[in-house]
Amino acid sequence: MDRWLVQLEAGRPEAAWDAFLDRYRALLFAAIRHYVRDYDDVMDVFTWVCESLRADDFRRLRQYSAGQEHRARFTTWLVVVVRNLTVDWLRR
Image 1 (cartoon, one colour):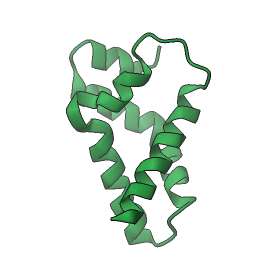
Image 2 (cartoon, one colour; image 1 turned 60 degrees about the vertical axis):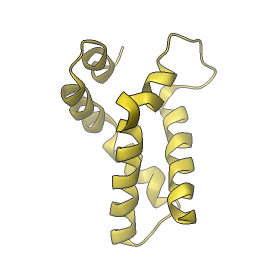
Image 3 (cartoon, rainbow, N blue to C red; image 1 turned 90 degrees about the horizontal axis):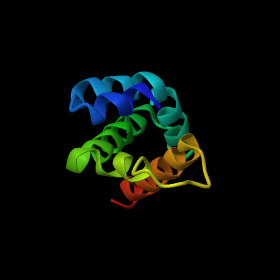
Image 4 (cartoon, helix red, strand yellow; image 1 turned 180 degrees about the vertical axis):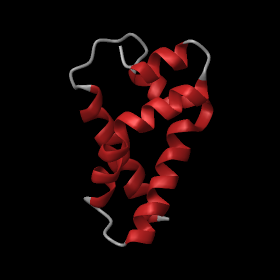
């Protein structure tokens, strides 16, 4: 189990978020840069993605880890979520 998830389940959301970003920051940026090239836009999308992932007590992240069996690895799922959030940002 990932360190960030252990922290989240232990009721330490800030520690969980820090651990999550330490592990997946590069992946988040890579997924965003696939669709957005301008540096300022990349940073805006990154902020949007982070806010969305933290929303409702990490609802999106908790959905994946809800104890279900998954066909995709977490990183694959995360890239799809980031892509969808990036497209949402572009539509705005």
